[in-house]
Image (cartoon, rainbow, N blue to C red; front, side, top):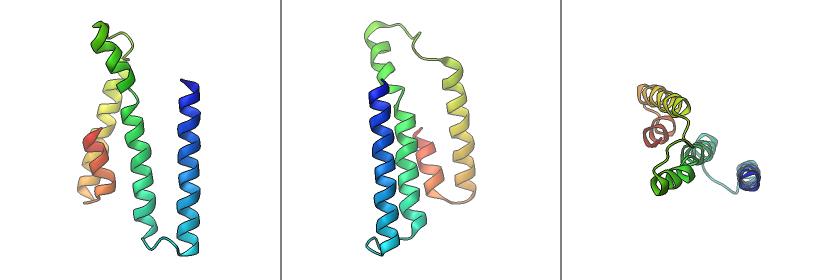
Length: 101
């Protein structure tokens, strides 16, 4: 629910601040593109995983009404376009999470 969303947002914002601080201070010795690419992928994967809570209810009851079919098709299509774009750039930070999603 709302509490889980707030906790997730707070966690990602905190992670962003920690990584940004570590990059700025030189503690984290990795390219910023890599660090923020990993963080962006974690956010994306959590977005893709969010319908899984409804999926367990659908499997238990056999009622698929909690899943919005238009949103599912739009998300799948969006993921396919990002996968194609990431593949064309040979960029795993774009391609891989969209392959999973």
